[in-house]
Picture 1: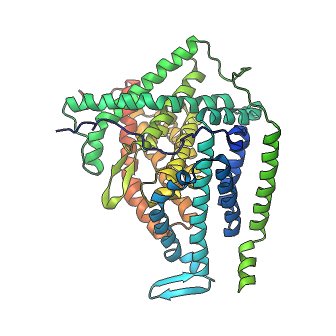
Picture 2: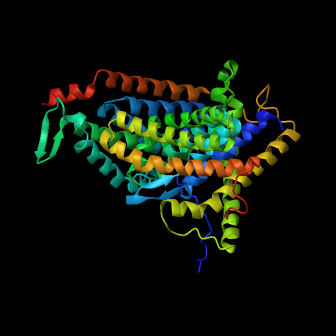
Picture 3: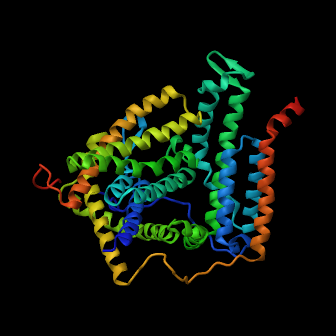
Length: 289
Length: 184
């Protein structure tokens, strides 16, 4: 017998949880926040320095404190990932042979060999991950999805001159986010309808499982495409013309505190880039030893 | 309907399906040894086949951005954590749509149904090869292991993608397939 609630799909996502607040960071222009977030992700991926990552980490924690959001919420997201991170770090430390060439061995036991290079790579992996996750949480706590989409649209608007459809792109994201709840309820109905005809979405593996899911997936796609068609007709009936010469209900203005935040962050980013460029880790390590 | 509006809407809706398949875990099919096959990239292929390479790339971008966020927020296994890096999660996914569309266009001249299957296989393999390729270049995994994963996961995923692409697009466009009657 099917349990009650078997057909209730729950979207398990804790990110994108906007926490309303009144802090400086909440009030920053979404464009400024977007650029800062992108810079942090790019820097943390491009850098090869633990030291640089640590500076970024301190900056993010400082900003989190400034938002007055409970720090525990931000760090709770990291908790379930710790075992996965450790597994990945172990792979980095012991399984990748490239890190064993021209490196000094720190510890060796039978086939296991830990070199300075592989230890550094593993620590980098963990730190990089923590920095990006905290950065994403900080961004999503302080930016609602509407602000995010307006920010992206305004940010890309200069590119419209060279033919990049910024407005259309923002529209696509709007539709995706707004369509999700409809899709969830439609799929729940579909599951019940197919189950009443004897379909079973239960366990099983590989192709056997896939065969059971086909009667769910195909109508789900078809229903969605039909929704899309209706929506397109409705938009056309309302004379939607896309981005050409469009005015906006929401207008973003860069103000003094935005400039201040942006220039302060630019200094920090420059410092981080410089430190990774001069290989600060090696310098620090050499001076200790 | 205006072609531009239709493209916007279909890209949005297919992006939503990709997010939905990932967030509800409906799009993951358990496979041997704890690994899972995914069909999250199928909306990208279907969007590209129906509306062209740009729509495909946009859906790929949504798919990639979502797998980045999911890896950072609700990882289900160690593999999800790699996707926190946009070079793994976003860049390879941008290529799925355009490649699926090119293959579809190339084979469509002869026959429609095989063209859909080829697009499904090609798009899926693009995903497998590029994602694993970046993981290898980044030295997250030894190359020997990458070969094994490509063989055990990439092949079946390509088959599932082809089946689903053919089933959905043929039903949507009303293309006659040899099978008769209900597919349930």
